[in-house]
Length: 193
Image (cartoon, rainbow, N blue to C red; front, side):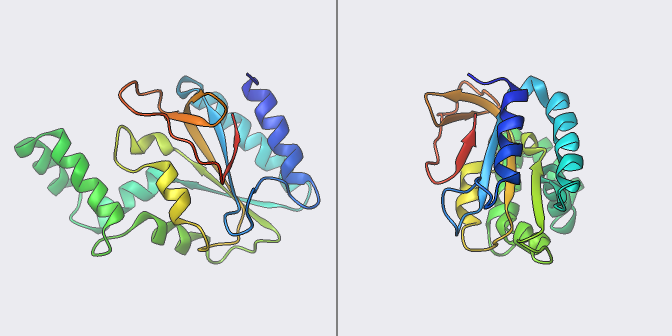
């Protein structure tokens, strides 16, 4: 298994190649860089260094926090107080399910729509998006494989999802290394695992 440094080095080589080599499919210009959940701070440091290095090659890197999108969505729907009250009255599972509804039901603010809106002003030839803080979606608020699938054909801007989890086999990813979660694979997205 490659070290985190090795995964970042490989990702950087693929991002600076001409043409860029991160995507398996042109209508889904995404890749996943997997890291151990306990390596969050090291991953963030390496991601900042990678963004700086890519800027030297003319790339503009934009970091979008999935945690930020989650909290923004909660604030713009019923608000945090309503979610806290729901948890107090009905338990964590009900509050988590409501947060999932906020991010997935068309009546509220579907996460793929919000992310596509954020990425709309970016130029696929010069811009690159780093999707960070995915751990905020644990344990089961929103599946990352679902997000990538739902982003298909919504943007041509390349994006890297920094995925906290463990690798099982060659493409099986277990989000946050949660033992009660099945390892999921997405053969359409390149994984730096």
